[in-house]
Picture 1: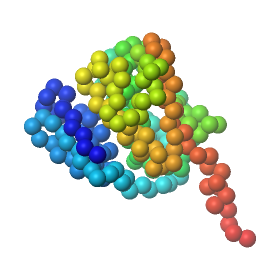
Picture 2: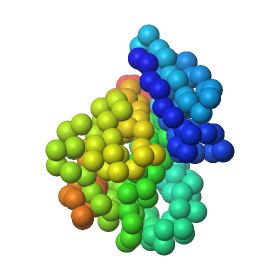
Picture 3: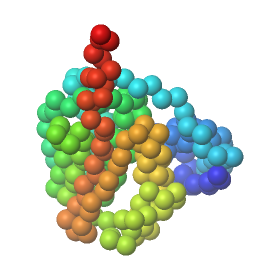
Picture 4: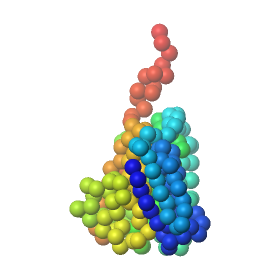
Length: 212
């Protein structure tokens, strides 16, 4: 793997969303070189980082969701977007750090491509799913099958020169390693829904029972 990405604006002037992409590539085994307003990522192959599974409690799941949303509070205020958050009783068997990483990637896209309206962050306990919905510009049908491809930005990305095509690619790689899934449904002009699905915790309860 070899990737070259220019910093938006041509130089590094502080913390950017691309910093999360770089952390993700580094954790997956890539060598990161930052020089001359460009970032270079090199790897023989992406091998993956440390993953620590734990049963994230109801409170832990809420904290991860709220922390991810809080990171983008200034953008919500700047763009006058409404955040709809719904309380949840969802428990997830996952790596809390990597789940937070993925949620930040998804929320960053939701805020970036929503000009007016709202972003909703909720959980579907019955389906063991966390859902991020927005009222943004949506994704063209021809782009949907490729949104997880490395470096693919689609029509929206071509309009937005800051797009790197790395966020969803990294999110998919991380979720694959965790054994979770990600699905995207979208309609141009109406918005996008991203669903992060976890396995049922029934198998965990089985292992938790004492052996006769």
